Image (tube, rainbow, N blue to C red; front, top):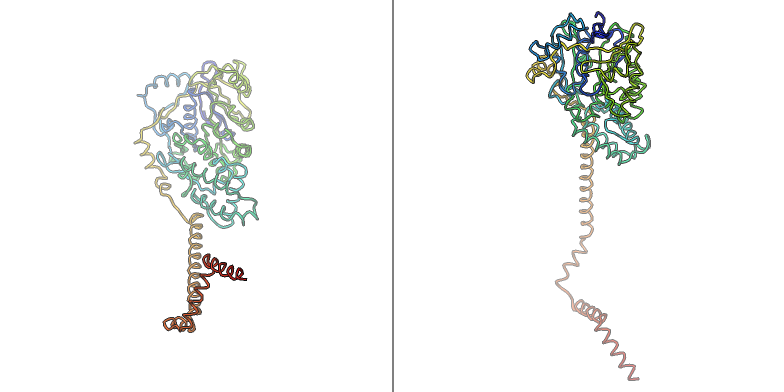
Length: 513
C-alpha cells in the first residue's frame, strides 16, 4: 500500500488491505486492548511500517519484547507456518523477514545509551508533578527557579536543586519580601521528595550531556527511519518518573521543532505506552498541558499514539483528537466494564456488517477493530482486521546482540561520559566557602583586638604604685600589725560569739544600775 502503513486484512474474508495513511499519521492515534490481546505486536508492526516509510519512531519497551525489532524474523521460528498462512489470507505478497535500524536508550545507562535532561529543561511544572508537591511547595519551587535564573545559576542535576533549596531556605527572610512567604516546612518536604527520587534512580536522568532531539530523528543509509527504543522494564518500577520523562520529551519536541503544516509523512511518530500512568492523579494544569501539546504538535509533524488497556484511560478532550485507532479486545466482566465497552464502541463510525460493540468483545488475539482517517481527515468505517505478522523477531533479542547494536550505533560514546560543568551547586559551594573564610578572618581579627585590649588593660592595672604596695608587705610596721589585729577583733565581734559577749557586758552594766 503506497503512502500507507499496512496494518492487516479486513472485510469478510480478511482480504481487504487496511492501512494507516502517512499523510494523516500526524493526526495522532490510539492502540488499546486488554492484556494479552496483541497490543505489543501491533505496536511492533506499526513501528516497522513507519520505519520502512522513512519515518523515525520513538517507543517504550515495557516488557523487553520490542528489542526484537533489531533482528530479522526467522523461518525456524515456531510460528512461521502460522505467519505464512496469515500472510496468504490477507494477500500480503511483499512480506519478508528483515531487521530495522534501532537505537537503544536507557535512563539508567544499562541496556542502552544514557538519556538525560537538565533540571532547568524539565521545568517547575513537570518537576512538581514528579515530586508530588502541594500548591504551596510548587510555589516555592517556582521561586527557586526564578532566583536561579536571576542569579545566573544553571540547574543541571539534582544536587544543584538540593543546594539551591538550602540557599533559598537560608535566605527566606530577604526573598520573602519579594516573592512571598517561604516556609522551612515546604523546603524540608521538597528535600525529602528529592531523596525519594534519588532512591528511584532519578539522578541518572538529570545532568549533561543532555539529549539532542536530532539523535532521535535519524534515518539510516537506506532511507529507513531509525527506531529509538527506551528500555522501560526497570523504569516502570517508578511509574511517575516514567510518565513525567515521556511527557517532558513530548514537550521538548513541541518547543523545539519548527512548524511544517501538513507534511506528506510525519517527521517523527511517538508511541506513549502505558498511557494511563500519565493521567492517573494528574492535576488539571498538567492534563491541560498534554491536551495543548497533542492539539498543536501535529503541526510540527509529530504523530502521538497512546497505548493503553482501555480508551477510558485517556481524558475525553484528548481522546477526541485521536483519529487513527486500533482497538483490540476489551473484557466485559462487570457492569463498569460493559459501560466502558459501550462507550468505546460509540466512538467509531458504524459498519453495517456487524455491531461494533460485539466486535470489540469478540475479536481474538492478533485481531483488532480498526478505523483510520480517510481523505480530508474523515474517520474511516470501523473494520474487523486480522493484524499482519511482524517482519522482525517476535520477542527479545540476546544480551550479546543488544550490546553489539549499542557499541556500533552512530552515537556510541556520545552520552556515556557525564559532564559536570559549573552550575548552582559549585557556585553556592564557593559562596559558602568564601563566607566561611571571611567569617574566620573576622573572628581572628576580633581575637587579635581582644588580645591587644587585654595587654593594654593589664599594663594599666600593674602600675608602679601597685608594685610599691606589694613590695612593702615584707616590712610591716607595728601600727600595721595592730591595725590588722583590731580588724580581726571587730570581725570576731561581728560573729555569733561576739554578739553574745556584747549582750553579756551590756546586761551587767544595766543591772549594776
